Length: 414
Image 1 (cartoon, rainbow, N blue to C red):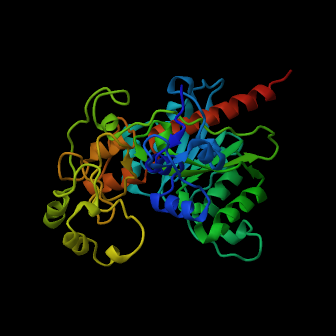
Image 2 (image 1 turned 90 degrees about the vertical axis):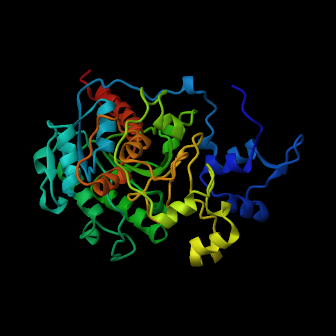
Image 3 (image 1 turned 60 degrees about the horizontal axis):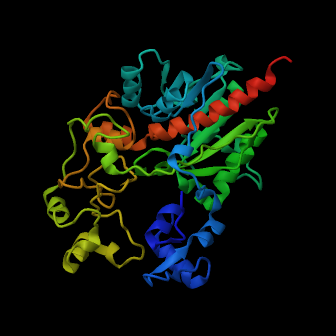
């Protein structure tokens, strides 16, 4: 496979997850300089220069060469916390891991889990009220998408008890009670900068205190893992200190799937997306979005409408490219939110002036069409918008299977 020597501004922005405005500023500051492409004379970036700064994103592989698939050599079990509507759990299941119990507080999400997997042990209610000691030394993995909350810092190093009252404390308490070989936490990318990085460091120190060494954390871009959506998740991996095996993150795939791959028959799905219920735009918003072309956003409006629609945001910095945004068929969708018609995070259908329907939302998150969501349409959107994309969960699951295969292979009597 021949790799391009030069990358456009858009390609570089997409690959490293930085805005075009940031790249332009970096050019001025000398952090990453653009050059004139010899033939076209456009300002582009040398691939080698970008790779020098962000090497791990540039594994030179083709789609055929990348497969994270690995068969479990034993039956491995997972306890999932903050399970939501099951995106991560289904992904783990597809990777060959057995979910023995799931805790979730939202009643509609619990109904969704029970509807689709009657055999799953769904522990409905606030995690604070559950004791997980019955699973001690009986579960290989504890997973959980705990919310990002500020800690109260009692000293220079945050201790386990200092985190009381936060949901990460409850996650760590469950890990301590269960004593799994490995624990996996997932969160938004913003955790990296939350409280200037102190929150993440606090989490690492807490896991260290309860006997887990944190592997180098990574932000996984869903588009690199068979998900047609620009979504990012921070993965935090804790390995029990008596285990000397390193965790290997899933290798990124070379192929990027688009909205067309999500909603139409193709490699990801065997049929076009089925019809389903969906939200509608208010009259004024529909009038505005009718003026936006595919892949366009608020800057495609006439200047007077830009000012009217954006209000005070018009005069603020930043591209705000997610506002009044119509997604194109040939690109991945922007990150889905919990409410598809809210202002500032519009993801309009390419051809029709409407939000994506419930089943379209689910497809973009790589849920199968058979996975039913319970509750009102608003509750269904919320569950899907909060979920870990199924295919991303599956890829992380393969990495866990690989880790556990190594552990049990080394643990066998010689």
